[in-house]
Length: 460
Image 1: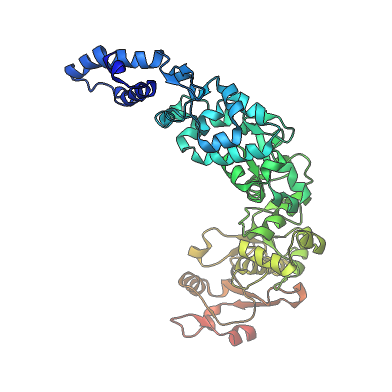
Image 2 (image 1 turned 180 degrees about the vertical axis):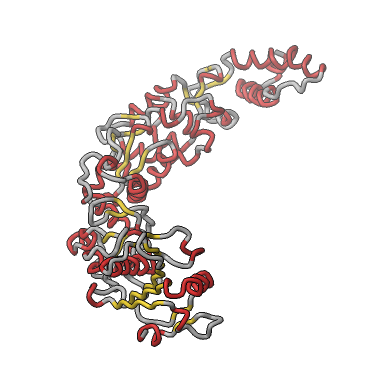
């Protein structure tokens, strides 16, 4: 009361009251003296300052501090004075003291919790855009809810949908412009049931970026690519396809789509039979190394050509690919048909199938052996003889050096050890070279290396 009498004007008194509010906000340290002064001095003064109409608004009316409004200037410009006063039930503080009250000013986070503000602005999307852009001021803690106690932003109703109604951001889906270029069959992967973002807001990249932080789902090209990647990793047949997809056509389309937009290592491709196979079990018909004739003659067990629709010119063009581009993509996945070195598994499989067919025609009943690397041969006769067979497959005739296990087996078995060469792979079956060498120990030299020159085994 003494201080109040000393103040020359009412505003001096108000400024004094505001000045002492700051120190009073600090709690006691826990020392006995501090606790005494907090309970006997600070708390009573704080209650007095908060409960008495000591501060004037811009109209000159005395009000309690809780009845005054101080707003971020930009927010005030965007929203408007009338809307803010109606939404909060407060009056704007006198301009002289408002700087002292700045710590309690109405910021963007407070605005989010005022439904009347958003209701008033529903018909003015350009103002909403400006407010959404201001969400950049929010910290990551704010986005989740302050101190874990407030409502998460994803659940607050403040985002304008394309029907001019307000929704929580978690119920809004924005469709990016990239979707115009995404094949129609992929639209089945877009989440259904969400309300689309108002188009005028969707055009503002900065506003959209801030709304994404609050839980708005933005479906763009990257989302679609992620969905397709994850989907292709799980599909093993018709059962795993999304509703509305035709199997295997849309699986092939999805693979071609990814091949066109990025280098993506698919786990499975559709084979000629319609089954899903690992790339390492497939080959490309008509490629640099054409394995199709041997496969058609049942001389390529365990392998299949990729589905013919992968190479359909219309499909490739529709997905922005060329045949050469697709073959490079398939080659990088591990599909066969491009290089002898990478096609060694096919060369070995074809050579063994040819050997079994030829030897079977001669009356041999063959069985594959286990631990062939240890034994030194691939097949053995069942029942009728003691012969064993080691098969060598190659793209063209070459010198061959036998490893130690094969050298030992050949020396021990002599005339019962047969070396079979299948060469000119791949080719048509009647063009594949075939040569049988009995007791190869008689023609290898030098003996300590066991190298057989191609001229010798071809003439043996």
